[in-house]
Amino acid sequence: MKKILFIEDEFGLQKSVSEFLNKKGYKVIHALDGELGLNLAITESPDLILLDLILPKMDGFEVLKHLKENKKTKDIPVIVLTNLESPEHVEKSLSLGATTYLVKSDYQLEDIYQKIKQQIG
Amino acid sequence: MELKPIFKKIFSYKEYNISWWESPQFVFLVLGILIICTILISFFVGRNYLPFEYLFLIICFITIILFCLSYIVVNSFQNLAEANLMKTEFMNIVSHQLKSPLTNLKWLTEIALKEKDDGKNVGDYFEIIQQQNEKMLNLINNMLIAARFEQNRVIFNKEKLDLREITEKIIKKFRFKIEANNTKIKLNSPDHCKILGDYFYISQVIENLLENAISYSKGGGEVEVKIEKKDGRVRYSVKDNGVGIPKEDQNKIFQKFYRSRNVLKYQTQGLGLSLFTVKLIINKLGGKVGFKSKEGKGSTFWFELPLENNL
Image 1 (tube, one colour):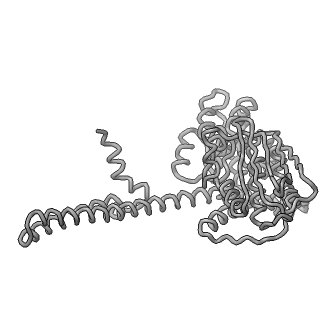
Image 2 (cartoon, rainbow over the protein chains, first blue to last red):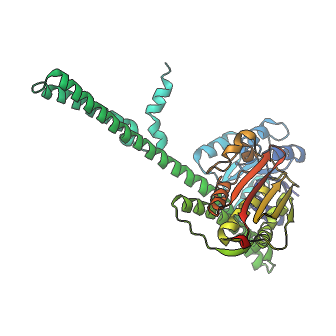
Image 3 (spheres, rainbow over the protein chains, first blue to last red):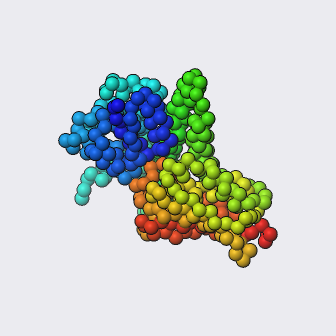
């Protein structure tokens, strides 16, 4: 079973996405802040990371930077899933190594699932 | 002398999203040219009719008046531009704060509809949908209350309210949040504790205090709500063992839109309006509000109001 790490501080969003992805056959592990997310990425070696940008303790950009600097995590595909939509945020995320940038409110869960499927099957 | 800050100031109109000819700097330039022209015309016309000393005094007087008027006009322009920028930033923040629960409503509805089509029970989803709805309402209520107070348009209903009953209802409303944060809630109160007040506003006060305590508690934290009757007054306190407020931030905690640096580290959601509205409401009801807090140890927020039979 493929493993997804979902780093998101909003409990409601975390719950709905996880439930949906569980039903699609993925194992979802959560982190409510950036620091914990980074630690879990190193210890759990997920197949894919869903990353919010506004996070307590360590923001998403910082997490992304550390993920791409670490040998253990640099090859894990990262999908940024956020409600920030300015071109600067998109550009910064992609330049730091994010695979895809998705604005939460623009997508249905089914679309997000398709994007995940493209990356890890 | 550093030229960079001067250039930055000259081109600061770009930050306000206005054209150069609408900027306070341009208005200042135009008014300056007008003043110089006025002085020169007054001098060349006046020297044919008045002795130099009188002319000099009159020109000085006109110049001072014109400079004062220009200062007022340029300052007003600057304030307007800043207010406009703040309004845009505020709209950005509010939209972002509303986007999270709205996105969740969209996704939950998507899951619930799919489950319903598959003939499954969707009751649980409606509870989460209700909770997200409440979250948005709370945010909007705080903004409305702040606006009403600023426009002096607040009218309180005077009805008998039981603080214990309201608290129990609100704790029930927060059950998902309490569960998610793994917070233990203790209610320490007499069976009934009645005050005269407005249900909407008093509920908002309790909701804000409780929500803050739960949000800023560390995982597995404890929140204690204590209601005490003393000398014809009721003291309502909410104690948490959360992140606390740094000493240097404590005098700003009731200010509008203020969020402590410490708090931002733990909770990204919030507008910085909840304690501001708590203070406005309790003061208007003739009560007192206060807190004690220690960084890393937790906070206790309290308010005091007269008991119903004392009014």
